Amino acid sequence: MPKEHITVELGDRTFEIEALSIRSSKVWRQTFAERLQPLFDVLPTLPDVDISKPEELVKLLPILQGLLTTYLDDAIDLLFEYSPILQKDQEWIGDNASDKQAIAAFVGVLKMTNPFDPEVLKDAMSGPGSGETFSKSVSRSGGSRRRSSKTNSP
Image (cartoon, rainbow, N blue to C red; front, side, top):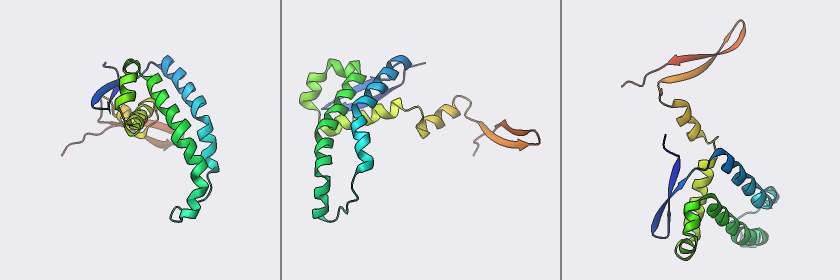
């Protein structure tokens, strides 16, 4: 089975980022959580701001400063730490890619590392026998799982 991967564009080049093994991914996810924990801690404390009023936006400046400096840099660093392919070209990417491209690639990595993404689960559950579905039914003996076969014919 081919290794899962995503394709990202950084600068004017295209890169394939392969999914890490379970063991390597675990280490990376722990680093991700540690590095971005301060951001996660700040998000629930965001002030209630009416963004249509400029005087209200001032309340967000300290938070935005952190988001646009420390956390942005941390996210880009985590992108490089995830992919040996990107690490090899880190200097070129740093000189040629935009922050927006790097964050889009980072979001792609996050989607690839999230096994609970609804689309991923849907694809995994359909698998090779995509005509099979699972349903729960209740019997006198309690809940049970029943497998039924459905075909998607026109």
